[in-house]
Length: 311
Ligand SMILES: NC(=O)c1ccc[n+]([C@@H]2O[C@H](COP(=O)([O-])OP(=O)(O)OC[C@H]3O[C@@H](n4cnc5c(N)ncnc54)[C@H](O)[C@@H]3O)[C@@H](O)[C@H]2O)c1
Image (cartoon, rainbow, N blue to C red; front, side):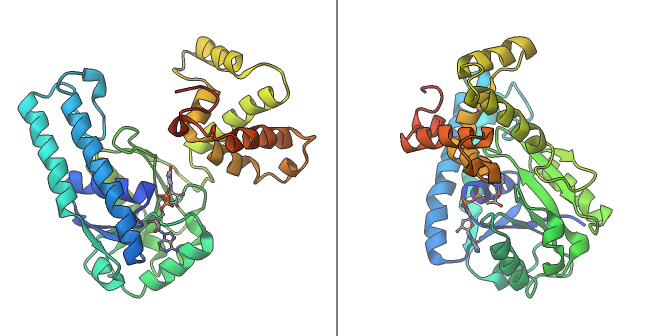
């Protein structure tokens, strides 16, 4: 099978990036959105990301550190070659089709990438409706960060062609794609999805079985929790904790800098899933209180100009 037509369902933070990246790499891309309002909200995101692609490619002419793996696998392109890629980004953006019609979106789709809200009921409702329109051949993947494909496989009408393809935010730079099947996923379709990930300049990271949080968050979440516990327990200040990690491991950033990048609101939403967070005497309770105070003060991380550090 050759994947040609790709549909991205959802045009939020991730959906818009996945759609543009797929089009940039030459795929015929349709974005399915649930309402005209969603279409209007998706458009400025797509335009913003297209401008970032073009600006980054322009920057590469004078600054080799601006090279992004998702935009090119080369590191020494000439100015005319970079101009060609800028044109490619513009053409990709212009080529995107946005629709609210299940029928138009699903018609002849080879791959549908679901990137709608992280809500199980809403994902089930979407899959149940979509299943009525999909071609026999269509492979369906979810970009869900926290939910497992086995929770949804039965609603897709094609459990053997359903799996997870999980991107990281800013996919043109952080070009990881975690590929994870459920027990009923057939290898043939898993392999197709791995190939597609490579074809859109991602680095596929293959999981052999289902794992909540995939590889990255299985490592990152306990690491960040451990760092926050040290702070909440008054063992050391955040700068000392970061310095320890950076000096001792050679890592470029410590956990509190990473928390500023992830965003403190996300960190707070993760910690309050722990029932202990309700009790202010427990470590999760102390972490939740600390994060809540910073969020209330507007210090939510890099995007706000201040989190643990100032930017
Ligand atoms: N934001 C991230 O950093 C990130 C990273 C990796 C994976 N993800 C995953 O990607 C998915 C989307 O996340 P996001 O950050 O892009 O979300 P978002 O809130 O920015 O966008 C969600 C999109 O889905 C649409 N939508 C919401 N509810 C819907 C429904 N019931 N039916 C149809 N469409 C609906 C919205 O209109 C919007 O276009 C989630 O599963 C999330 O876990 C997010």
